[in-house]
Image 1 (cartoon, helix red, strand yellow):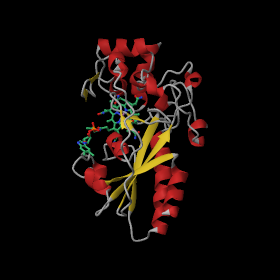
Image 2 (spheres, helix red, strand yellow):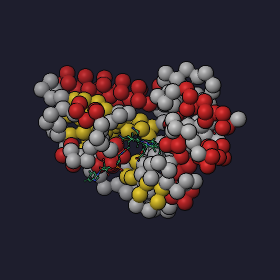
Image 3 (cartoon, rainbow, N blue to C red):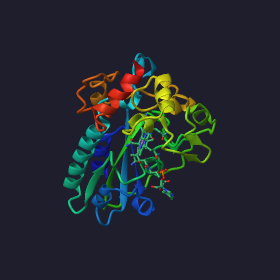
Image 4 (spheres, rainbow, N blue to C red):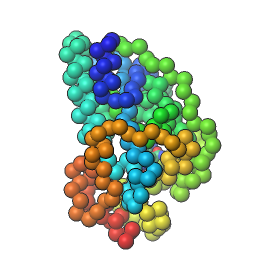
Length: 263
Ligand code: B12
């Protein structure tokens, strides 16, 4: 158990464990579902904070999660390395890392692993880092005692719901098609109303309004992850190298169309 904790502490400043059985009937239907090892008993969930501090975002034209290098690559690297090390210590068990196109509903998963609770904006809210965290996980056939999960951090103040400019958030639900974050990712032509929204918010990729509205995000601790701190790029620009950027997977046309709207 000591080895297990040491390996996970090297991966992430905040991690926990939940039972796979709770999620086996609630997986997202995607290709990576088939990579979950047969006989999986536990899921080790790790958080990767990315907040840089309020003053650090001055002049940025993209969402905060996209200012740091593509989190999928970085998290996959760390979680794959941890899986290899865990396999060395527990050779009869399987360990498979997921992030990005994970079959797990990661917000619920992290909540069940005791790392925080789901806010009214549908995002995981943590005590230390607010909601400014990415989530990744390792599915394993090893049985690991699940973490205590009784946290309830959202006060239900509704500021996220009231400030959402598109009405994507409402009591008891979320309409992903209305979410401004999804609109900035749209490949199909935008409506005039959607174009106006991007112009008025001034963000060419993603949306942070519901998170910025959350009182629990005030005073969140800054990330200590070197790989994030060393790769900060506050603004998307025409002709960017998109290989390590979270807006790269959609291709240059989408981000450049949005940049055109901000001119
Ligand atoms: C698709 C997606 C989006 C889409 C749609 C979002 C959506 N909620 O549908 C769009 C593009 C809009 C989007 C936007 C954003 N996203 Co997003 N997104 C995802 C992704 C890849 C899948 C989400 C999904 O489809 N979930 C399926 C739905 C149905 O899950 P669910 O509502 O939790 O329901 C499940 C549970 O309720 C469970 N369940 C049901 N009953 C029961 C019962 C029991 C007992 C249990 C245990 C479970 C259970 O089963 C249900 C079905 O699977 C996740 C990564 C992931 N794999 O989770 C990231 C993820 C949620 N996104 C993330 C981020 C950062 C964002 C943005 C903040 C980015 C930005 N700044 O623009 C915004 C925030 C918008 C918002 N307020 O939600 C982070 C959230 C981190 C956090 N702190 O919570 C994630 C986790 C990615 C990551 N690895 O870090 N996103």
